[in-house]
Image 1 (cartoon, rainbow, N blue to C red):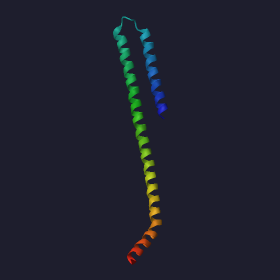
Image 2: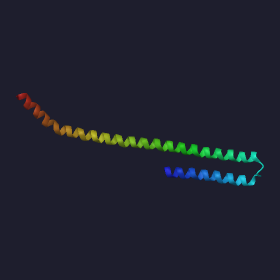
Image 3: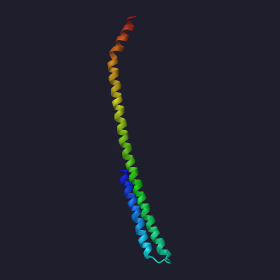
Length: 104
């Protein structure tokens, strides 16, 4: 999923760069205001692409953490069940030892 996000981000950056180059080619060198406007527009598009990427990465990270927490919880529950089963197996032996101690 992250590779898809990276590809989309790279494509958005390349598109912004290509569009800016095409627009700059049509603007006379002396028209600094128009050139600056193109660069400002390009910067805005790049910032939007970056914001989109950051949001998507944040969501992906949040979802991954949630899944990992679920996995850890399952492992903990499984381990607790295993320990409880061992305790149940040992309980009769412990009771016998306790009875023997009481007899003495």
